[in-house]
Image 1 (cartoon, rainbow, N blue to C red):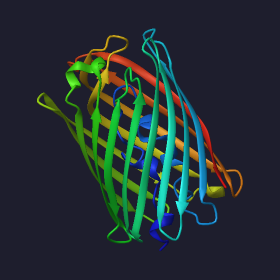
Image 2 (image 1 turned 90 degrees about the vertical axis):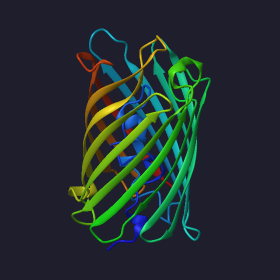
Image 3 (image 1 turned 90 degrees about the horizontal axis):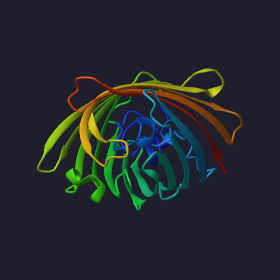
Length: 293
């Protein structure tokens, strides 16, 4: 069996394993961090302590809604002797008519044993207009046998005056269970329970399947998710809890020993706050690369 460090996903996987639900204007892939399905097995290689991951996403809608754009830049540094992985990121998202939000993220992961990962992070949004102004998270992943692994993350999100109903913040607890069919193929189940303080709570469910032994070292991740999550209505500042169905596919293909390209496509079908009718449909293609040095 390979060691824990060669199986773990990196800091962009703090929220979930490619199935974290969207929050306040982010799609599943955006909320998780695109590098979650890309830099896995790469950022903890001692011979390449640095990993740089730029990516670009474009979301298209029906019913005449304007498209979204998002640019991400993530940088990882791994200290092999200390078994520490550090992460810094900048995300810029355009959501008409609200404008742009820029998010700065910092995090760290520690691997005290081959079976255990402890991680935490913080993300701050400069003059937030629709994303959380502050986001904090802590979690762990523990593989107690060659086949089974347990995951748990806790997240706190704070909002500004643009989301008055969420001024007290939102808390989410995300347990998960992963089964390894082999060293490269796995099935992950994730459950999220969130609550808006002094208001209401909600639930979210997700599953993904990872095929990691494709020809030429390629990897394919298929994800399906359903549940209720917070959403800011377009340009109004009003808040709601509405259900959404999400399906995504991500594919990464190494080009050389140091360079990997990746592509993704996500579909979201969101209902209105009363879950009685369609609010919108969204398609999000993503492209990016991972460079180790």
